[in-house]
Image (cartoon, rainbow, N blue to C red; front, side, top):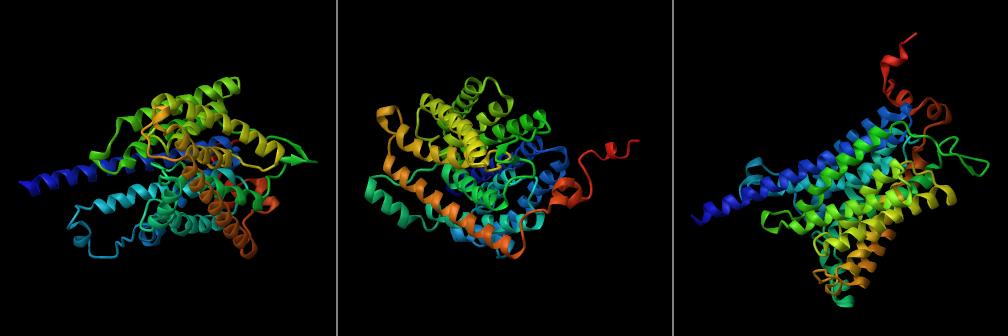
Length: 405
């Protein structure tokens, strides 16, 4: 009887995590539509193919290298051995956590859109999903978490808390993307004689669809980060919801209903709440999301107009800056005095977030500098002018229109 109960509980955990993995997997369709709505028509096919190809490469390298680095589990054993003890729980856990790792190249893709070579970016994504990201994952969530987390806890009284990846996933992805955009440089015509000339996007409906898909999948991203049925928390679900709507309403207010900022404001709220969704009060979650949305709006304007960094989807402010804010916010609103669950430290959150920023920026800069020096990472001017669809894939997004008289 005891074995039967244990088997049922383990089966429930496998099903629970598999459903979470499917929801987060679906978010990659959101990344794709968010990108193709934000680029010109001549680069839409490239965005779709990049996201799917990056996902596929990430799956292979994370299976063979990344997951073993992060958690010390290798799947190169007979199939019977893979399911004999836990009914395949570690396999489906790999699937779930792969969806997090594959977010890194998907995030970068949006920032460097319309001007990056296909194969070199695929290679960069493989390095990030198979090595750079899993190493950091291992020292926060995985097999090597003891030294850094122990040091932070001894110093501040609490370890670094990142329940669903504001820092481990989003901040890392955004800060890796920043040096990629710096090394690549802006798109042709984006800045002329030191003056900003914004390039119109192709489709608000596609952008909005991408945001909606991401927002729905995000509840799997956050809630299923418990990784077991017994760990599930309604607080995580409601906090994710409150932070999302906080981000939306802040964008509605601060941008006078701009549709691009409103739909990205929802994502800013969701990025910001990942770290603290299990420890803060829903009212605090609303303000975390609203502040995150404000950071994204101001950060995107500062990045593109003052720093003149051509970030097509605003991935550095959305994921890098807002993800970092999410990590720090856990150390503010998580205190019991502000209605939180406690067990966090502002200084600990600041240290952990800072380590992530330095690690990600340095890793991204080294990888892209090396790839640029050896292979080149940017399309030439003629290819960029024609568009990545025709230059790389030999077809555009609307083939019927090209054959009309």
